[in-house]
Image 1: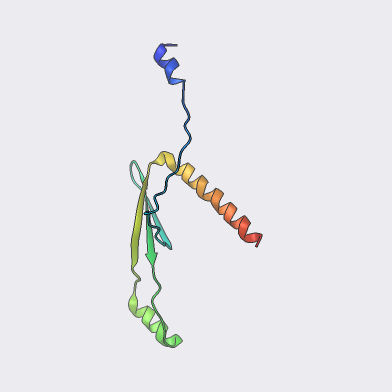
Image 2: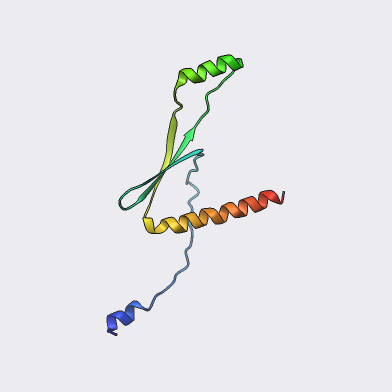
Length: 106
């Protein structure tokens, strides 16, 4: 085994000091669009507001049929490398299980 190969086997693991600045802004999102590119995954986060409906059932139905679409405003986009996707999915699944467990205990 060459000296270069031996040096490659010596790995150093560092802990991560997660720093989230107080100035970071959170955005509410109720829709997500994921697109896979050649070298990355693009995750778009959208906020979509329901139209205000204040008429009778018939009036509200007519208004919705007239509208044809509702605007979804992109509030953020995150680009991830394909190598990070399995860990991202695992982290989401882990947190979902914790959330569901806490909710069922209430």
